Image (cartoon, rainbow, N blue to C red; front, side, top):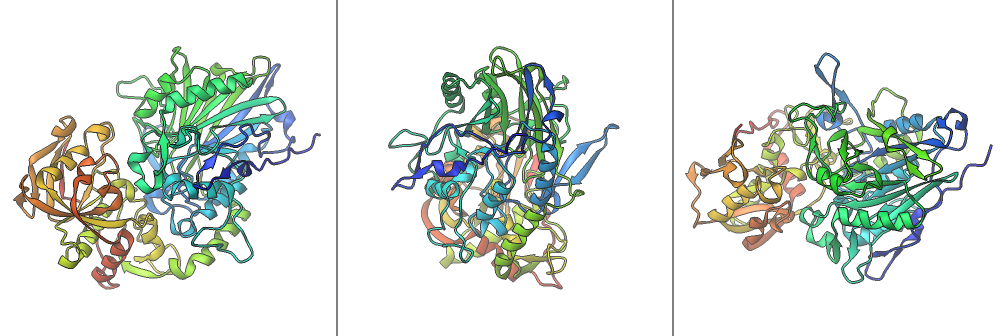
Length: 602
């Protein structure tokens, strides 16, 4: 039996420059982290071919503990057509599932498709996601692409995630311990330094085992600057996903690497939300739609499989490549609730994947398996550090208030957040806000009635509130005309948001009708837009509150960036907590809002 391969400390290959951007290091990493050679005899060999196991996931967002409420569930369709919800996720269980799946697979590689960090619950977010990187190192992640959330704190902080070192202002969080950074490479092939034109991190990684080589190319969506604060992407250029992957596919081929997997932080929407939906079923309206379909159809046929993310959907589909041959495209939901197990049959003679025999399936990270002890220890360690802040009660609720877990255009938690923002910024000296708007993607979780710790049912802790709004965006109040306000509503369902609408959550008193039987901007019934029952006057000016991300035109809302007379207020989280404290008590908890401000015609 040969020795276990030495772990390549990939993170040390990238150097931070004076500007804080990372430069390209050595591009070919020699060996993966993985099982040793035990189980070699159990692997499926077919003469000159060998089966490579590709385990993948995406959009973890620092969810080390099991996500609460509906955010921690996946839907399964049973053989009789009924559906059921299954509690899923939690890194203690993810570790057990992955380690079990690897057994008997000597050629096993684990990859991810971005958003491992950012938008994280308090336990990870409070410590700038160092706990998540530590957990991923323990999970033996081999490689990941960057996602848009990897840029939440800018390229300098992303370089620290890769290379290690203590936080520039927070310092070292544990006495005598220095953050060591990611042992796996973060790939950013289409993210370049505006000045040098070079990728800020490695564009690709070559996984090698006993002569079997698979190249991974990692990209984030080209539209990342539209969904990240301007400060987070300062000095960076985001290139076309297809052009970039095709370019590096040729580079890898010249190096003799013919088996290639694209890790793409961009995704699609399957026709069903069930994780076990047959994405290739031929019925009308079946299958998958969205940006990743166009990408898949244009990518070089030399790319053998696509691991995708961003949309937080679950799918295992085939999409034809430019030569017309089907090619696997997968995504494993979010928050560590699923993982994808793909078999890539590698031909030793051609050094390529036999595409006709690629098999793939999503598996639930159920919570009925033993917890991984090392992950339990990690969570306990960081929770102890977070406890003095995390456990503080902020307010009281009478039932679950769904946000992330709601599939409705208007979410009860969205209404509550918008009301909190309006209440905090309505006083004349705070901005004089008349309306508040909240982006749906900024709502990261649900508020769950059941206690998460010892605080008691119905108590909202600081940690729970932070998990809902972890970005700590500063609030802005600006002047917008009625015409600009209506234009912003139309941008929810047109332009870059037409294919996948982003419906702003609105404060009480602001009402309108959304007619989804129409297309584009016509979906907003302009005559229905009212404030406290009065039609919005296109020529009149209104004071509108929103977070700094939206005020910068983020999420495809250029109309919101036209605001004048900006006043910067408190953070969204501070306003939310202040509202909970002022408007609830143990005897008078907040009930879920009715979510009746937007009338939807379907």
